[in-house]
Amino acid sequence: MKFSVSDLSDIIRERRTIQPKDYTAREVHRDIIERVLQNAVWAPNHGMTQPWRFTVFTGDARQRLSTFLGEEYTRITPPDKFLQKKFENHTLRPLQSTVTIALGMARDPKEKISELEEMFAVACGVENMYLTCTAYGLGAFWSTGAATTGEGMVRFLGLGEKDKCLGLFYIGYPAVEWPKGYRKPLPDFVKWEE
Ligand SMILES: Cc1cc2nc3c(=O)[nH]c(=O)nc-3n(C[C@H](O)[C@H](O)[C@H](O)COP(=O)(O)O)c2cc1C
Image (cartoon, rainbow, N blue to C red; front, side, top):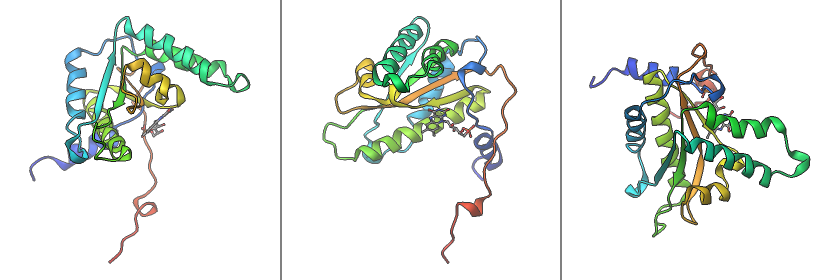
């Protein structure tokens, strides 16, 4: 065996979503952030378009992201659907996390690969990010929703007209006990044809 499948399986199963409200204020070192992103770009991608475009928010930039998310949530939410709790989630998360990464997808100019496949490639990269965080003992949280994936966010990030944002990826050292995961048994998901 070239690598330990047991170690790999442990990392995959230990990977957990941990939200920014449960992070400590301890900063995630830039070397670690870079390793997380390096591992992301080794994900498979159809046609080698390498569609991932990351924007890393740290330091004062977190406040800019927080302000944008609050304004964007308010802009796109009909008044009767507006929830103060949701507004606070949008504005607080970038401040509770010492680093937040916007998950951009750049459309290949020739559009030789479908948009769906480009998004799959970015999603594969996100799983690599999650697993790398797990190996470092870092909590991570992939957050989606209209304010983080809409056209306003694409403009805020300075991405191209045809590009997309697949959400935000928060990273932080957990202040809570590492959560336990749960999955249904494999036969619930698998049909064997023999
Ligand atoms: C594409 C994608 C988008 C997600 N968006 C959200 C989100 O907007 N809000 C949220 O609370 N969790 C979000 N999650 C995280 C899931 O809630 C989480 O993965 C699920 O509860 C399973 O927990 P685990 O990641 O610890 O195994 C998202 C996960 C994926 C894969």
